[in-house]
Picture 1 (cartoon, protein in one colour):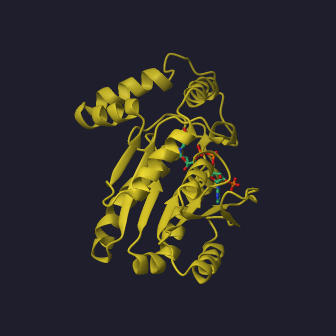
Picture 2: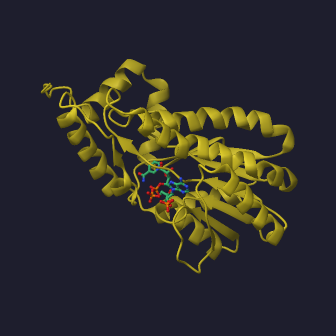
Picture 3: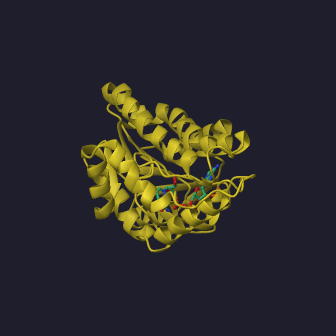
Length: 269
Ligand SMILES: NC(=O)c1ccc[n+]([C@@H]2O[C@H](COP(=O)([O-])OP(=O)(O)OC[C@H]3O[C@@H](n4cnc5c(N)ncnc54)[C@H](OP(=O)(O)O)[C@@H]3O)[C@@H](O)[C@H]2O)c1
């Protein structure tokens, strides 16, 4: 029987290519995004993941038509750059609403269907969750929250035979880089360091893996009889995650500071 997969954030990047690949492989795919997804490769719904009522309506429509929902891929996400000190509450609310609360609303509204299908939930975190990055502090915090939430969820859902996994992508070339927002009111105390740091991150992403490569990792997870609890995308990033576990935290933070901190730049405030 064909499995029904719902993927959030399917209008571009990782989400679009995963939706396309799964549809090509015979899954019934519904892609979700705020914008209208102009494609006949898979079905789509115009839904904002921060709006629980929109999700509930969309899932009911999908279930009424397909009679099952088997797999949820929680991929919608956004980034905001800037210093922690000068990030406004509205920006913090926005990023947590999409990257964390939205992901939770999706799961909450999908669970009644997943219980029936004994389905799977795949949550997209980031290598920037365990390896917290300066001037993207709230992004890192939102992705770290996804990982800890998913661990607790795994235990709560075990008796219901619903498997969960956090996927930690490394740098991937997508629209994420151009869509990354700047905080509204950066201070001269940080501005030069923020700009340098974000420049390095943007370059890493531009030179990153393809979203088609990431899509293949999602396909493998979807097909797997038993998913791992966590899956990092990219060999180099698997090494980083391993080193983060074994090296002293102080040393890990020192290295990240060297790469992205620009602590040698004097403030202008
Ligand atoms: N690219 C990387 O290097 C990288 C690395 C680690 C993790 N990730 C994570 O991978 C995921 C996908 O990112 P990407 O790189 O493919 O970026 P992307 O090309 O910018 O795609 C983001 C997707 O999320 C959707 N989205 C954003 N807000 C939404 C909302 N409120 N409701 C519904 N959909 C929403 C966007 O569609 P609309 O704007 O049309 O709503 C878009 O389809 C994100 O969670 C990101 O944090 C990316």
